[in-house]
View 1 (tube, rainbow, N blue to C red):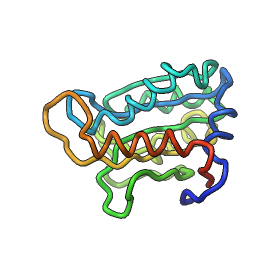
View 2: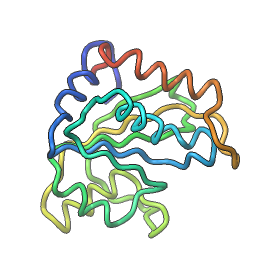
View 3: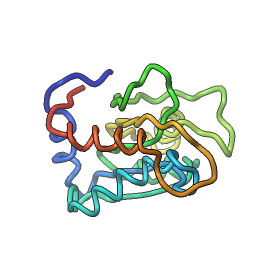
View 4: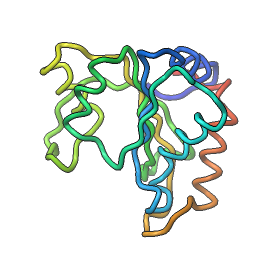
Length: 162
């Protein structure tokens, strides 16, 4: 599903304000725009949004994340993206699917869901918020363009739907 104007993320963030919800920032703050996922989670903490939800930051997804999400009702993964077809950000609902590229060091959100389903017979409601990034070098801090995209997400929380 693609983001359209409406009230999705504010509603989603309100629905995420429960102990059975998880907001999971993926990335590396030491690699410029790769830190966008963590920056979004930082914003949630700093603004006391979703205070009941579990907040997690990790450099990458792991097999063990299937166990983590198996105990949740809904999960929002937040990650930087290089995708050319995304101008600023995109939100999509994710379905379980095992990728052929799966290894112990590279696992996708759909693969984590597929493992969750296979091992725990449970799949939470899962969304992926992708925020456009531009630079990935060893440097702390977001580029101005990536920071603007993060600000776009935050500014549009009341006007985003799926």
